[in-house]
Structure formats: C-alpha cells, structure tokens
Length: 182
Length: 182
DNA sequence: TTAAACGTTAAATATATTTTTAACAAACTT
DNA sequence: AAGTTTGTTAAAAATATATTTAACGTTTAA
Image (cartoon, rainbow over all chains, first blue to last red; front, top):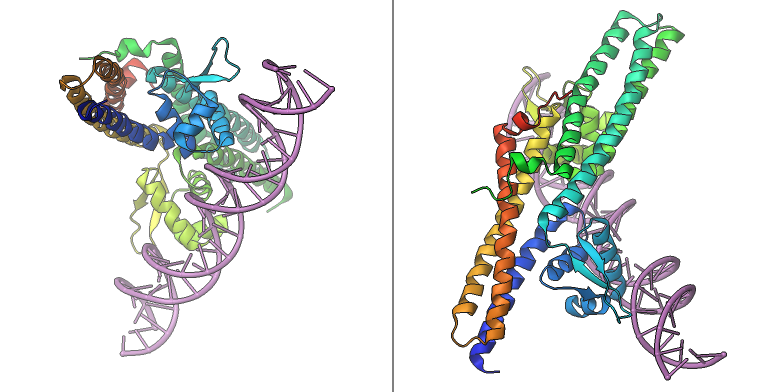
C-alpha cells in the first residue's frame, strides 16, 4: 500500500471518528455510560461485532463490554445477531435512528405517565376524602379543592404525552411530520 | 384544632407526598440531581419559595438549594419571581408541564441535531475527498461511498427531529395532537 | 461605619457510579 | 473426562457526582 492510499484510508478514519465522537457525546441523553456510548458509536460503522472485537477496538475490559452491550440491548439500540458456525455472540447496532428514538422515548414517557398518573389518582382519592369529611374546616376544603384541580389539570399533559407515544408507535405522527420533508 | 380536622390535614399532606414522590422519582429523566428533583416536586405545590424556606422544608444546606434552583432555572422549570419589600429572592415552579416539556426536549434535541449534523457535514467532506482522490483504490472508494450514504441517510432523522422541535415550538403539533383529546 | 442578612463560590467530605480484576459457570473440543 | 473458550457475576479499585461546611463578597439596616 502506497502513501496516497494511506492518506485516503486516514481520511475515512477521520470521518468516522468525527461522527463517533459526536454520537458518543450526545448519548448521555440516553442515560448510558461513556463506555456504552462509545461502543454504540463504534458499532454504528460496523456490520456486527463480537465481545472480543469490542474490547480490542475500544481497549476496555470484557465485562465492561458485556454490561454495555446489555444496556444497549435494553434500549433496543443493539440487537443480537445470529452467525452460523461462530461460538461467539455477535451484535449489531440499530442504524435506523427513528427506531431508536421510538423505543427509547416511548418507553421513558410511558414510565413517566404511568408513575405520575397512578400517584395522581391516589392523591385525588385522598383529597376527595378531605373535601367530603364533615369535620374539615372551610379552609381545609378550599385547600384540598385547589390541589385537586391542579392535579386534574396536570392530567391533560399526561394524556397528551400518552397520545404522543401512541402516534409515534403507530407511525401516525409521520403523516403530520413526514420523514422526508423537503 | 380538633382530631378530625387534624385527620383531614394529614390526608392532604399524604396526597401531596404521593405526587411529590412520583414527580421526584421520574425527574432523573431531566438529568437533575435528587436534591433538585425533590425541590421541584415540593415547589409544585407552593406558590413561591425563598432559599431559606427550601432548606427548612427539605432539610438540606443552602448552597445545595442555591445550585438546585439554578439548575431548575436553566431547564425553565423554575422562574424567579419579584416580591416587593422582600430582600430574599423568591422562586416559583413552572406548573404547566407543556411548557417544561417544550423547554427541555427542544433544547436537548437542538443540541443533538446541531452536534451530529456538524460532525456529519465534516465527515462527508472527508469522505468526498477520499472518493475523488485518484490514488484511492476501488475498495477504498467503495468503503467511503458506503459511509457517505449511511450518513446521508441519517440526516433524514436529524431533519425530522428538527421539524419536531419546530412544530412543538410553534404549537402546530397541538393541531395534530390536541391537548384536550378526549 | 459596623454589623447582620443573603446568596454564591471553593474546598472538603460523602456518596454513587463506572470500570477493572478475579473468580466462576456453562458449553464446547479434543 | 480434562482442558479451553466464552460470557457473566462479584468484589475491588478508580472515578465522578452530589452535598456540606467554611469562607467570601455584596447589600441592607442600625
């Protein structure tokens, strides 16, 4: 291999490294460790990788790769691939960011809606008790009502968030916001 | 105050604590510390608070409240309020979750789009260099093209994310997904 | 103009998270 | 059946983050 081809190869590696760096840096958003972020970004330019290839490429320990890959699988950013004849497990990065977006945010928002809606329902039951209780002073009733209304109002948001999740999962959102807009 | 009104008061506190717990627990999503999460959830049921009220209520140090409140202000989850005659600064929680949602996610997604788009543009420039370089072997050209196309394809996602941000900021998204959908 | 109140910054401490090394268990090979 | 290879779990070390205590500067009040 001569000098010029060497230069071209270097350009390609530079190009990849720029994108790898940017992806890894913004992946704190997805709540993964730096090791997992670097791993995903690296895998983004590979067809598939084994644990040993990962640790060679990233110069990290095997357990670190093992736990990172598991976390990425939970987020549906990495999938196990079947490779006949190989004892080693192989994994591939999800390269369609729309799918990663859907899996990650829908899961996260569903957790938020569920937890908060459940708490709100229970809280509202308590507040109704206080409102109905004949021993409650007018001040107490007024306060309970105020909080009840505040919570009732906040449900609008959680229902909306749930509808957003629904339209992402069903794909309807892409009718409103096309993937290939101008 | 008699026993019965005491019971009603307790019900109200229980109700608030349930919601405070749920909000604080899901706020890891927004990348704030536990102290800031608890603070926001507490402020959600208050009109406004001073730093001293915060530290009394949460039983934490004043600097902790100071840094927490600043972080929440950055996320536009807390706003400074003017209280005439008081030397102490007062702060109020943003109680409209739609506004918090918009501020937080739009800011985050804009950062992601900007960083990755910039990296992609630079990378594609490098890849074009490698493709055009007469010294590149056919294999190198093919590889550079493959990555170029992969990056070009990923731009579709970032443009879409940008359009999502735009429709949230402009409010257009609520025409497609109404806030008060049954 | 001195003293107190208020908020922030800096250094130190405490706590939690991430990563590694070491030990283990299962599956395969010979 | 003994020895490897592969992946995971557990304990330890390293690192990073969160929180507190102490010190500081500014503003206000006496």
